[in-house]
Amino acid sequence: MHKVYFLLGGARSGKSFYAEELASSISSQVAYLATARVTDKEMEKRIEAHKKRRPRGWKTIELGDSIEQKDLEQLDIKGCEVLIVDCVTNLLYRFLERYRLDELDIIPNDLEQKIEGEVSQLFESFYKFLQSADATIIIVSNEVGMGLVPPYPLGRIFRDLMGTVNKQLALLSDEAYFFIAGIRRRLK
Image (cartoon, rainbow, N blue to C red; front, side, top):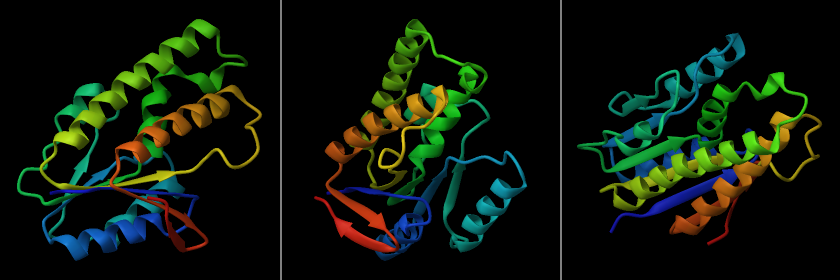
């Protein structure tokens, strides 16, 4: 019986390091779904640091520039006993980029509803994949709803959608952990 682990917390709280440690303790046959992409020098540095930490034998899966529903329905993890998804926060943001919300002063209600529907469809495919995968799944995500309300529309809709996605992932997981200041606490 394969498990789904959900690792949630703030930035630099130890989630990714623990995901890699947990995966290594389960199997050497690991697939790593890297959801970030290089957008600037700082992000390039972060991605390189993650790559250097991964064992050479792990299979890395990188998504194209535009994230589509089929990308999450057809993840190729054949031969792997563990899949790390690091991280869902980048996955959601990359999907939202297509709407150019950073250019809007206000998000019209009809656009917001469209986005919510499309995000729901995207993650429904992902949830189905998680439930049918013949591998242990380790999902990393950021908790973005514990701070101030973002002062701009993109930040607010992102925070709300991330909260909805995280709730569903917590429900689907067998074990869920919260990370803060490098300390891990089991939630379920």
